[in-house]
Image 1 (cartoon, rainbow, N blue to C red):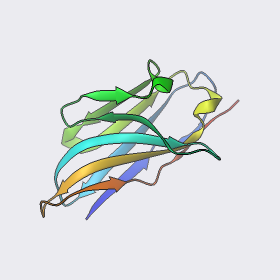
Image 2: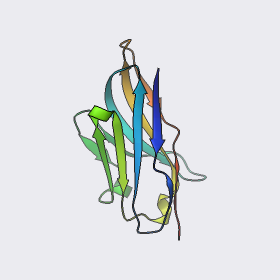
Image 3: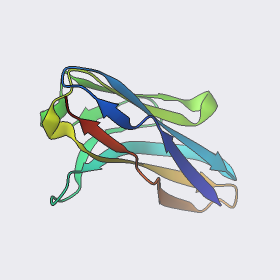
Length: 120
């Protein structure tokens, strides 16, 4: 079994910064691509960005230049650094990872995303 545990959500003022973490644990053989999604109240979940196991990153146009995705393969952890935050970024942020378990079965996993609130 694999679990994704997220941390770092909370309240931040407009223009501020916040860093989210997504740590994978369990019977992991390898982690392939990982990604961040967000869902604002009353809206569909949307892709924030993805990162491959080798560090290739894709971002949604709405966050380019302000958000940065990174990962520490030694810690099985992915990060989302959010800078210059705007109120429209208020959402539940969820991480996902495609994981090959020690049984050599590859499956997508989701964390329970924390709420990020951008407000003064």
